[in-house]
Amino acid sequence: MRVGVWRGRGVTDYANQVVRRIAAGLRDAGHTVTPLSHPAEEEEIALAQAILLGVGSAELPEAVAQVSPHLRPHHIVLHVLPGETLAALAPARSTGAVVGSLVPLWSGRWAVEYTDELGQAILELLAGELSGVAVPVSQEKRAALATALSWHRFSQDTLEEADRAMRAAFAGTIVSTEMNLEERNNRTTAVLADAPDLARQFSGIVDPGRARIFAQLARRAAERDGREEVELWAMQEETP
Image (cartoon, rainbow, N blue to C red; front, side, top):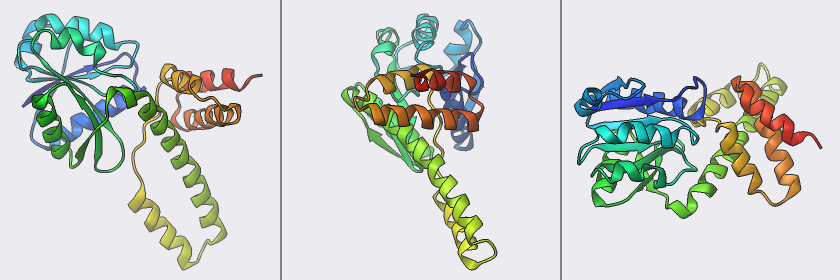
């Protein structure tokens, strides 16, 4: 299958990182993966069987609007955003394209959403080719999924700090070696969400204490990943 990748403007943002991971996995599985031009060109899209939209929430409607005029029935169009439903892909679906979402959870699991049995079959196949299993997540659960993934990322960062402290305490012993091996075996990839998506998740946290911790952990993760836009957002939320 030929997969066209529409990348967003950012370099370190969530969607670009996730799309790079998916593209690499599909390439390893034998698919042809090619970048798409901005603006979209009809010939490029016509040659692709699937379109992977590596854009954030703010860019998604524009990307769909540029791609949709060149789609034909049975094209596959996917986004990778955990907090977005398939509503933004409606213009693509109206052309007869199969639409869906493919979001990495943890090792071997991919959250998917689809509109029909054909979409289900395609996403299950793609998850399998990425050495994983598709887990359906309905549109009603998308916001909760996005927030959960952010908490999951923060917990990884905290656990790694705890592991480093423990290894320092047990330096030079068999316990330190065992911890290094266990950490490597259990590590998963959790990409930090973009600032607008984190702001949406933050606004849904009712408890002030939890909200404050969420912002603080987001700032720490942003400092670690070099995500200045997320760091600035978190600093604003931390300021009384």
